[in-house]
Image 1 (spheres, rainbow, N blue to C red):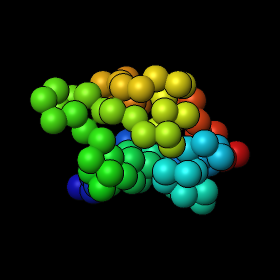
Image 2: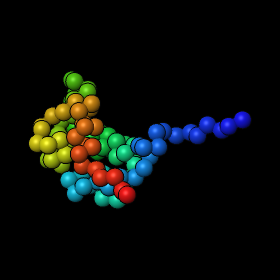
Image 3: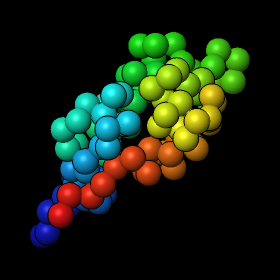
Length: 91
């Protein structure tokens, strides 16, 4: 019998390098995308950046505004797209 490998998609488990803009929020060491998402949410919750009425909306502070391409507010679904532009795959 073959054993099924547990965990997520290996693509998301590979470490990526955050750029200087994203590093202000998640740190500068290479980390998996899953950990970037976790650290982003920790940062959002710690700083009270999730909109109180529209819970899917993230209100950016100065650090996140830079990550979000100058937008003051994005949905949690848009956030992933913006973050992708600030990571580089490690060869």
